[in-house]
Image (cartoon, rainbow over all chains, first blue to last red; front, side, top):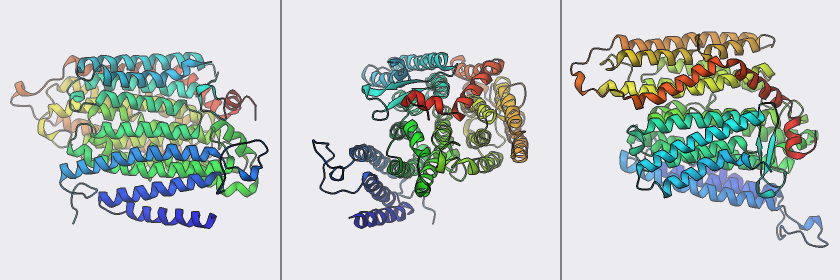
Length: 111
Length: 502
């Protein structure tokens, strides 16, 4: 499980960084979205990777059958904030496209 | 309970909501509310200063959830100082915006107040994740302030700024995740306790997490090599926005100062002094590059952006000494440079408008219609920013030089500050002589818009603040010294939040 999550974070993060370094707003925003997903996965796994357990303390619970609820709460907040930021970036990119007439990051074609 | 600690966040936040509800169709109501919110923030900051200037630290558990489980707000001298400064700059930015600027887009005052709320939240919170949330509030408001007019210049700079900061936020979350994974807490005071107890097997992780965090703060503070975004963004924003953004980079400085002294201070065991070896050299390079940039700028607004980069270099170099005098001198300079740069940004807008098509380009053009008045104001602002006597910039720089005397970094600090001061002097006197002395007399004086008394009021207001700050340097320096000593012995802060001494 750890290996799977770790490689997922690596692949998502790597693709995200590659896309962020492109010169068109669409690919960059796509890259930022992938990067955000990678980061959220990373945050979630920071508590401990323990599939199948609930973050609830009950009578007679063994500590091994318990996951930390805090990273889950943190990830939830991070997802919400990330979504808001992403939608702002999309709207900004579209507006910039209309105003400047190009989707190049610098607002003008360089070639 | 110390409910008053929430006021610096609540006042601008409620004002922002009221601005949208009450002032939706009335620009007058929006303006009145904005001024009231500015005064309210200043009052709250002044009250905080009054309560904390003896070194007391007050905490407030949000929702009654005690630290480390809930989010704690912490008021100490440093946060009080920054809240007051934010209030002052926001008030003058709001006042200046009432000439032409706040009607270019609908939501200027709303986003200005939201940004004040975000900044105040960031300097008050004692929790790492809340710091992230407040940073995002602050950034989202700043994105909007940058593009609220819908002009092409702002949009182009906005795309870069937003993407860079989104990447920065991702890095911030990675740093938070790493530190939480190692220490198991997000509360800064609790983290300081736990970091000190870590064994050598956690060294790599906790140091990596700490340095990642510092990289994010350095991006906000525009430290080399992450400074490239700043001149363009500040040069493209409208005057009141650029003036208010003068405080934005200082939040990054605040975060560096707070986290590197509290969590990664000299008592942090395996993670001790994680930033100390890098901060001073980076800051010196930032200072040098900022001044060279100011010298090479073709537009006055961009030159001012580079001067901000340079001022960040100066204060971080002083803070990077990590001695009480160094940090105190850095803080003293922080307040001064924020006020000085904000004043110059407002002034340059008035100058640029009177030069017609040439705007703020540094070429020979029509001289401003009010040559004598604006020239004198520019002279005063330049003296402040360069650091010549008699204004507080001089005192700040002398204090920085003095603070470095007994440290091994004395040569670097003296050479960097003295050489770059000359560069700043050259850059600003070239700009001043180009605009005011070489400028040709206008043929049709009638059509040139003259600055009204109301437009000049915020400029004079900020200049008055600078003069007052110079006159009351003694108490201000004592306050900075008290804050610096408190930062370097974080035991009081940890005890106030956690109830135990480390």
